[in-house]
Length: 303
Image (cartoon, rainbow, N blue to C red; front, side, top):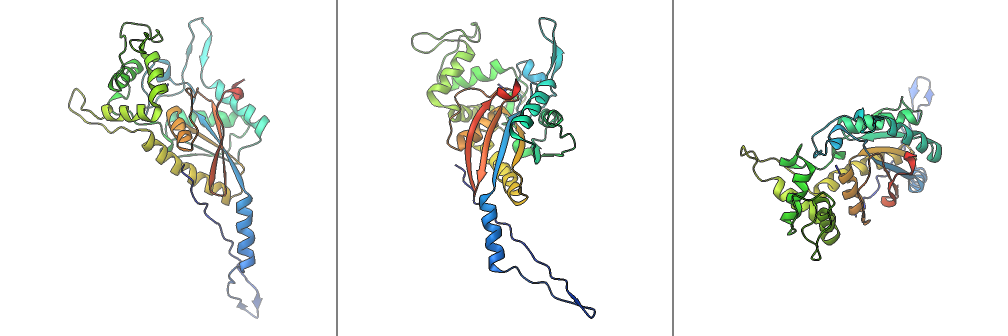
């Protein structure tokens, strides 16, 4: 598929005294106020950088199918010109370049689906850190697209923009231009116009509304909007960052999905103006309980 500011958890040190005097062991001593203050000051000085990365190109990406809670592996095939299409290569390149330019990762996390875990594992291979365990967290998943899961992208986005009051030329090419009234263009053109006019949050709210309508068999499936996705993903990122602070980890790899990453960054006050490409890296920092968006959708690590 194509301001939450939490308070930091303050770690405290426990000093255990074990002085043996004639078979008697001294009781544990509580840390002094100066010990605690020193530890807190150290935590405040800790900056964690999160490399929030979109997963690699998948089979369903290639087939132009909606992929939220539906999963598929990284694609391996042949391009139209006969060249090899192997989506496992690019994450390795990104990992190599991240290691060279930024340094080693202290920890790594991904959403709990195959495409996320595969991408994180290949990035770590490229970084020379294959032995680093990838923690999986379902809160980092892509949006749930309800009844549109597995459907053609064209079908879903056409119905969304029409629900938002735009008209789509169903027979036109995807990027066919709109008319003078900003209507009747191809579905991708109208998708871009709708986002430019009303924003991604409004578009995802429209998607959630219609994606929860009954299917042809009468089944109602849950769906999510940007608020749903950013709330759960930010909860995961806050937990990851707080743990990193406690363990003095400077750099953390996190692999998620394009729209979830976009919704997270939007919730932090930065508007994403274009789609986030496969294995593009968005850099966030966390210090003293506050998040800063440093960069969005950086593709330079892919080269």
